Length: 282
Image (cartoon, rainbow, N blue to C red; front, side, top):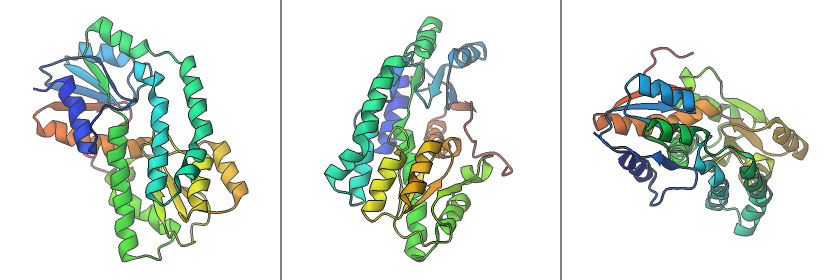
């Protein structure tokens, strides 16, 4: 058996983090958990389903409808850490995120922060979400796959990087979405490559442009808005690979759930998580 506190702590330990980040939370605590329902997105109907099917707790990846939606914007500044790790100067990294941070902060005033967490409390269903720690696990998996390729074949193209990610990580093979090159030349050398993930959401054109301006040739996001891609097209430099939201999130989620299952907990996935146990790629 396990508790909601144990589930949260496990996510932090796997990411190597000491504190619960602002995009995570325990909304109704529970103990003696044997059966866990896990979804990429969880709503009140999923909580009711869990109650009807005899689950002891529910774990969401995303924080929609929960109090963490009010503070999650703070995680966007993690892009600064990721950029600086690739050699971007601190002031340039801060400038790349400032405008979007303020937008996200203002948008927090528009959201319903109690729709799902309130239902969990009403149902007395133990419920939590773990977002950025699991995205960090997925980021590391993708970056390690890319780095391994570049160590052995430093002259690979952008297209070959995308193909290697697909071949290396089963969730990409099983997902109905395909890894895509949305900006740049697929046949150009990839050179320096960064996986910019685990910072709440993608960095848009401003973060990608800042990478390009400081010697990172290829940026990997899990998703991006079309207007941001058009900005990059107008910029006319660098390359952008998009790996797909659901498949990419599933990487870290599945790594985490494997550890939960090793502790004897029954885990059932729903709401989009790509199961690594599927027999055939889509």
